[in-house]
Length: 128
Image (cartoon, one colour):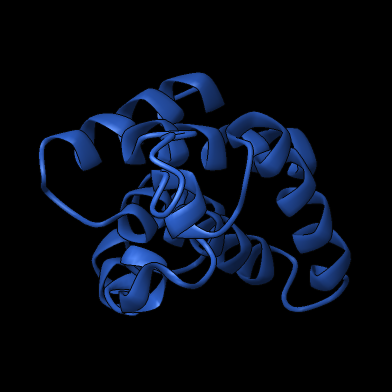
């Protein structure tokens, strides 16, 4: 599956309500790690809705950073996470859940399924 196909599949998983944003990203990128999609879904389960408060980083971006860390076995992950964050912000307009959803401004920058798609695409750009 290409990175574009993975991005579309992750967005579909989220849109169908089959998982949260972080889980959708980690599930479709599981082949980049030694862990199963099921294990990654369990690990990612607590990183939804800006860590449950909408006040923190989007779960989709967290999922991409988690996979980068696993793929790189922790070596250079901070640099990659910085790059992932920059790419994600370029695509979505923000990185904090409430900002993405327009809480307080009334202007949604990026719906969840698009955040998921963009996190997978950012991962592909940074890690390829």
